[in-house]
Length: 439
Image 1: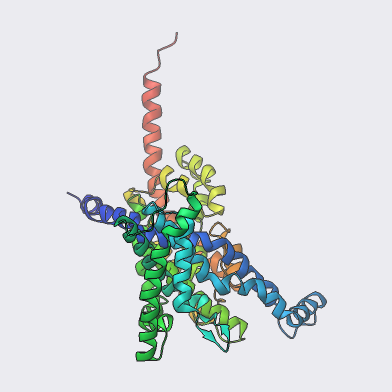
Image 2: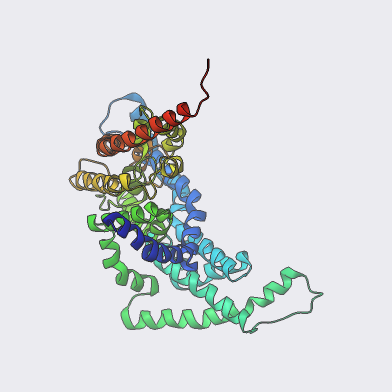
């Protein structure tokens, strides 16, 4: 058996079943769904940063830029409000979204489950200081607490309902009223468990629960913003996709909490006029590593347009426009790349090489860092600039990554093209041989 066949067998027998189970795991899917539900609010909120911190030199004399900068400075507090009520409280949206999704797994009412989760999170993460509720942990610092509270609240609700520990009203009582009484016991259980736990942790450590959780996961958060973390997550994503499994959903489902925590710190630093510290965020993943989709296949789609093989040229025409918006299923399954030994090496290595280039350039200060959430369908150069508050350096970096991708894909494409051309010639010869002779 060849090395390639052994690798394919190993993927099919070991990696594929494990990835399939992980991709369908209720907590992973619920966390992913929760972030997706909160995404529109975070994108719009991030977009407000452009108006608050326009991409111009503070000393510029250009009339339009000077007017924008002065307006943003004068009305900064008013312009910050939409940002503070979206990105600034993103954990509230995520808490409801995760619990609602997990509640569906247990056939619980998603609205009731989401509100129960929200109450659980506020109970431990919204201390009252000087007569006002502190919102310190409503942004990225409270992200892990929100996830834990969402899962805990939903599991408590599901357990009590499964054991019939609930208040049941006659069938004649309206459904909404009955559900209100049904949730009374879960509310009491959560208050009687989480609140004393929070008070105990505070008395023993001087930290409330969100602060204690962040101190525990801080090493993980720091490690998630490193080049090895990028390469490992990329390798997992690419291997799974090569086997036909949507690896990006699994990887982003795991990485989203870390990305959100780091994004919140970058945004806080931007607002305070400080130095941005984090590199590996959602915008970095989408616009440098997945240009045109997983495997950075947009440059390959352009190469396919000039292919001598009819099949590849047709796939190129089908794949270019979707690829501009990071949708590359026509390329992955049409060329195909999935389970195609010719494209295995470039499919794995192209995004990893781009990752090294982009990470090194960003860490050296040559490329602006991510401060905004962007839709994953944003065309790569545009999305890269948008994510970095409309800086121009990400556009250059993105174009360099595209050129490198094309250079790396090209020899493998030519090898595959020769194989297809030979097959097309043989097919044409067989068809010609089968035609009846004419007088």
